[in-house]
Image 1: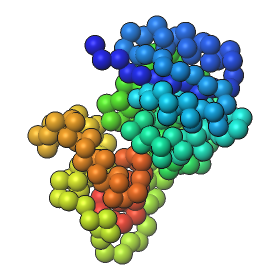
Image 2 (image 1 turned 180 degrees about the horizontal axis):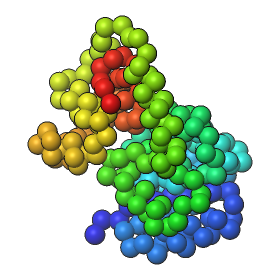
Image 3 (image 1 turned 45 degrees about the vertical axis):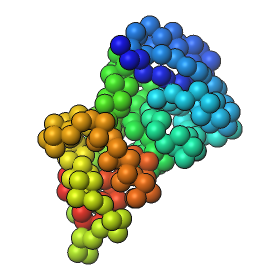
Image 4 (image 1 turned 60 degrees about the vertical axis):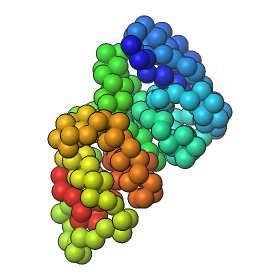
Length: 218
């Protein structure tokens, strides 16, 4: 069984210890490092090369938004899952814009965190229901604004555009692959190409830009 390499960044030593113990008990997860300081976390994450970082927002040194942005610049293949006490939708927007693939609050139990990690690794975006409602309302408001005629300023290929269109509908990488008869690895490759063209680090950022340009619908 392939194990997901996870790095923990949390400044509360008790919570860090508990998360390490709980997540370390899941056989499909491999804890490859932990850090309590934001600035040190960036270099530590890049050196450990995890597949996913479980990241607090409130950190000494750099906050979680800054850590996310720097990690995604240095290791764009690394997924970032925010775990915090904040429920502010503005923080959600900032985290997603920085490249995070999910946003959870700390009251969630271990099994839900485990499921969230699995969801992100399958190509999804994970948001708690109350946060998701606010975030999708934001998406809807973007779509409702009067827009100029649709244009593609990024030069996406037909396949890249189709992948983006299905992602905007909420399909995971595996589901996009089934619809388009592509391997999931190929879907990730096409996403990587369009991320580079659009100057983003996640499919949520790509969808926001495409909505603003009038290229996709929810």
